[in-house]
Each structure stands twice: as C-alpha cells, then as structure tokens.
Image 1 (cartoon, rainbow, N blue to C red):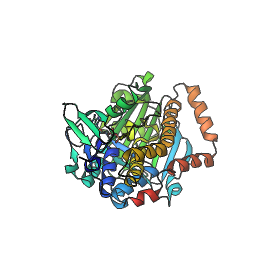
Image 2 (image 1 turned 30 degrees about the vertical axis):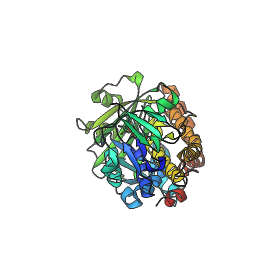
Image 3 (image 1 turned 120 degrees about the vertical axis):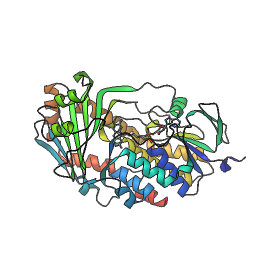
Image 4 (image 1 turned 120 degrees about the horizontal axis):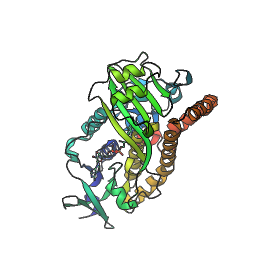
Length: 388
Ligand SMILES: Cc1cc2nc3c(=O)[nH]c(=O)nc-3n(C[C@H](O)[C@H](O)[C@H](O)COP(=O)(O)OP(=O)(O)OC[C@H]3O[C@@H](n4cnc5c(N)ncnc54)[C@H](O)[C@@H]3O)c2cc1C
C-alpha cells in the first residue's frame, strides 16, 4: 500500500497530540491518535495559558469555544513575601490585538474539549507505543503487546517520558529542579477576578488564580524545606500575605496534587525521516513560566501548517517544522529552568537580592520580554488562520 494511503499516526492524546490531530483532519489529512491510557486523562489540576497559547488554542477550537473553557485575566501582580507589590503587569493590554489572551482552565476541561472536537473514533485508547521503525516509504509502529501498525508518518507527542524521543535521542536522564509543585483547588474566592498574583518568598512561591467558584493555586517549595503534606505546606507559608493561608486551609482533601519538578536540557535531535516529536516529548521544561501546553499547542499549529503544505513528503515537512520550532522552544526551556532556580532562592540574603534586582529592572524591559514571548515568529496567526 502507498504511504499516502496509510494514516499519519500521533502517539499521545495530550493537549499537543489532540490539537495536531484536529488541525490535520480539518485539512483533510487522515490523522489518528494512539493513546496509552484506557480513556481521556482528565486529572491534573489547573493550567495557565499565556496569549501565545490561547492564540494557538483558538486556531484549534475557535475563539469562542476556547474562551468558554476558563476565566480571562487582565493583569499579573508580582509581590514579595511582605506583600509589597514589585510589578503590576498589564498582560491584557500587552496582548490586545495579537489574537490571544491570558486565561486559566482545568486540564480536564481542555482534554475533554479537544477529544470532543476530534471525535473519539479517531483515538485508539489503551495503545502504548513501544518503538517505531522508519522504513523509508512508511513507518512501522510497535505497540507494547507486540502488535505492529503501519503509518505514513509518526509524531511522538507522548509526553515527558516519551518512548519515541528515547528511541531518537537515547536515554537522557531527567534533571531534577529540587522543587516541588503543589496544585490546589480552594473554595475561597479571589477579591479581584481579573488578576493573577504571584508571591515570591524564600525557597517558596505562590500563585493565586481566582475564578467564579473559588480559586486555583500553585505553591512551589524547595526540596530542602521538606514539605511532605498539606499541614506542612500551611506551616511553610505561615506569615505570608493574605489570602495564601485561607486558600490552603480551604482546599478540601483530594483537592490538591504534588509534583517533583524536572526537565531535560534542550536537544538538537527532534526527528529522523518520517518521525518527529511534539510538545513535552520534544522540549520538556519545568512549569515555572507556564509554557508546556502553550508550546505544545504552538507546535501543533506550526506542524499542521508545514504538513498540509507538503503532505506527500512528511520527512521534508517535519524538518521544516523542527527548524521553525527548535530555537524558540529551547529558549523557553532555558528560561523556565532559570526561573525555577532563581525564584525559589532559599536564603534570606539571596531572596532579598533577587527581589531588589527584580524591582529595579525597568518595566519596559519586563514588558518587552513578555511581548517577545507572546509574539512567536514561527506561529503567527496567519499560519493558524490558514488552517481554518
Ligand atoms: C505541576 C505542573 C504545572 C504545569 N502548569 C502548566 C501551565 O500552567 N501552563 C502550561 O502551558 N503548561 C503547564 N504545565 C506543563 C504541561 O502540563 C505539559 O507541558 C503539557 O501537558 C505537555 O503536553 P503534551 O501533549 O506534550 O504531553 P502530555 O500532556 O504529557 O500528554 C502525553 C500523552 O501521551 C500519552 N502517552 C505517554 N506515553 C505513551 C506511549 N508510549 N504511547 C502512547 N501514548 C503515550 C500519555 O498518556 C498522555 O496522554 C505544567 C506541568 C506541571 C507538571
């Protein structure tokens, strides 16, 4: 059978893999997803999507459906542990007219929306990809039960522990950030529902995300603080400005998750022949800048665009996509790692020095950095619109 008559397969029904499948099917490409889990993975707490992420999400779902998934925010406040405001960042104004907005949403709602838009019939659940062989004119994909499937091409969107990436790059051990992230869902509402508030402390950081029914929050704690449970987390933030204590105290049992943070340094190996990578499989980063889903969605928009303009030659399209994405994603991986190391300085001296330096960074420089982050040169809305 000719390669073009075989489906293009995507390993992984995460945000990146699902978004790519939606865009490709809309453009007439027979794209299907192989997912290891038995059904949609709808746990995982809340996510923040920056304007470049929502711009890509709007290209996938349409702006109305994307906006309906969660609240929009206009500003980010950054403050020290005394409560003093360091920076007031008008993200809404900064992203106006650029096709994206700042929002938060539950990962489960995002996955459900993407699965609904794709159609469950295009996803094979309980199908863990073990390895793949590029046969020149097609790819043979091996599942972990020994079954072999033929595809015109394979996109490894199988996350941080990607089998496809391991096959391409060899085993690369994760780099531990020595930070723990806690994600909670509290019953306490925020006073200002248009604002995210980040509080930087000594070896700890807190992000408050208010929404109509309460609040989501992220707490980051340095591993040396040895915070094993919610009672210790509450003690760890004792004396920090309101409403942090209330938010933790009104988080019900089962309303929180805990992750050890890790990444892998940027890699120059993204693909080979008819195989490429997307999302965390390609560029795993720590979540300190909230970039993982944003980058995965951007990857999907760019890859869909390059593939549909070169559908008969996926190997060529894949190399163009990798060339367009590698520099930007490597920069965001490095920036995320740097923030994870600097923002949770454990000694009082280091934390005060960090805050003193940050408070004198000119506002124009900070806003310029955000503007560069939102304006992805390789995934401008022209590309996203072309997919519609
Ligand atoms: C604590 C924390 C907070 C975060 N907060 C944010 C945030 O606010 N904003 C943001 O943008 N990002 C955030 N991220 C990052 C984000 O979660 C990831 O970057 C994002 O989920 C990556 O999407 P993906 O589609 O590439 O991979 P994943 O979401 O990991 O999906 C991969 C999929 O592949 C499946 N799979 C795995 N192995 C196989 C296999 N062998 N065969 C078939 N299927 C397989 C998995 O079951 C899964 O469904 C956060 C991450 C963490 C840990």
